[in-house]
Each structure stands twice: as C-alpha cells, then as structure tokens.
Image 1 (cartoon, helix red, strand yellow):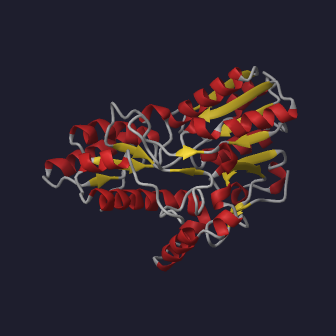
Image 2: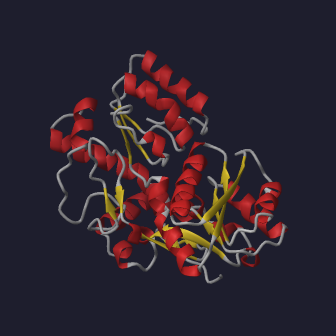
Length: 333
C-alpha cells in the first residue's frame, strides 16, 4: 500500500496518523524519501513499535537506542566522504568549498565533509541555499569569493541543475564534485556538455555500467528484468537501478529477517536484523555487488545502517543511465 506524502513531513505525519487511527496498523513502513520526512515519522513509528526501513542518509537517524525499529538501507552521508578527501590530497588542494541544500540531509552531508576535511588539515568553507531556490547564484558568488580549490555540491534532485546552471552563469571553472545525492541525478541528460567541464560525480561500482560486479550480479540482473516487466523501464533510465533498488532492498531485508526469525513481529524482526546470518553468495540484495564486495547489510545493536567500504566508490564525468539503470559516465572533464 502506498501514500504520496509529496516529500512533506507534515503531510507524511498526517497520512500515517490517519492509518493508525483507522485501526489498520501496518507490519512495516518505508518512511519517506528524504531525511526530513523520516525524522518526522520515526517518533510515531517508534511509539507504535512498527519496523521501518528506508534509504535516507542523515547520521541523526542512526540512533538504535532512540529508534530501535528503524533501519537504513543506503549509505550514511559520512560514509561517502573519504574518497573526496583522498582526491583533495592527491591534487594538493588546501581549501575546500561546499554548496548544499539547507535541510536535514544537506546539513548532515555538510557536517560530515567539514569534519573529514578539517581532520585532514584542510580549510573548509560552505554556503547553503533553501530547498525552494531556483537560483543559487548569490550563494555561489559568496563561495567563489573565498577562493576554494575545489567545490562539493549537494542537492536533492532538480536543485542539482540549479547549482550547475548558476556555476555556468558566473563562469566558475574550479573542479566541482557532486556528492552521492547529487550524483544520482542524470546531470548529462539535462545540462549541455559545455557547462560540465571540470565537473565530477561520485558513483558506486555496484551500479556502474561495464563493471563486472554490476553486469555479473545475478540478483541485479533479475531485479532489472522484473522492473522492466512491471513497466519500470523509464524509471530505470531516468534515475537508475541504484536509486530504484533501495525500495527493493527494504523488502528483501524484511523478508530475509522474517524467514530467519520465523516471525513478522516488528520487535522480533528488529532484533533479528541486528544479528542477520551471513548470506551465501550471491547475496539477495542488489547493492554492493554479488558478494558484498563494496559493503553489506549486517546491522548491529549499535549501528542500524549498512557497512560501506571506501573502495566501493569512484569519480567519473557526469553521464546517463542505460536501459538497465546502470550509470554510463560521460566523456567530458
């Protein structure tokens, strides 16, 4: 059963409360597509002891003592940061800038980058923009005036385009690196190549076209075939198998835990997810490769998010998704 919360926390809370007061308590919930919505729903879900899994990435949500029935099935913002630090070190960059959406996800991402770069002995400067902004030129001008050697940009969906359009408008050509959130957007499909010089996106090897771990992953191949058979071809081509797969993974994880526990009780499943038996390759979920090469979903009582290995990421030129939803890097930069 689905309800459209329009990515609005207030709407999401209202819809959930209506469901619960109707006496129809769900066994499990996918609590929204953004950290703001998830954060608004978790107190209600926790009180009702309802299991929930989604792909939001704010570290504030990874709090098993506060939210014992909630699990994440996507990378935490901080887990994607080390490759950026490595690039900055290799290039000899000393000052790092960041432009980000001023919401829970953006703030969490910014704090993760700030901590990592400062720990590495680099200067970190940033500017934020409201999610409703359609022009971030003033924020970028402010950031440009501080003369960073590279800039990381973070936005959920269309704001990614506004950032790059504003960058082109002020003719700023320092290297721009998309975080994993911005990088998931099909940038090259929506921006001319002339605006993408010195722009790079972080992507995962598990969903990279031509990578053996993606093309040779039988679970991913089955998932893609099933998605196509259900009319999901356009979704795969527009936002990719990585973004599409998180909903699939949530259901797979619940099913895997239920079979292990021989139960569908939310409290029982939460405890079971904290001690999942290791799956024999190929693992049943589509992320991290057929043999967990780049990470895994083995949660603990202190960590309700997946473990991600730094070598699972790489930087490529902005590209598009092929018909299987795998990322095809561009030829620019």
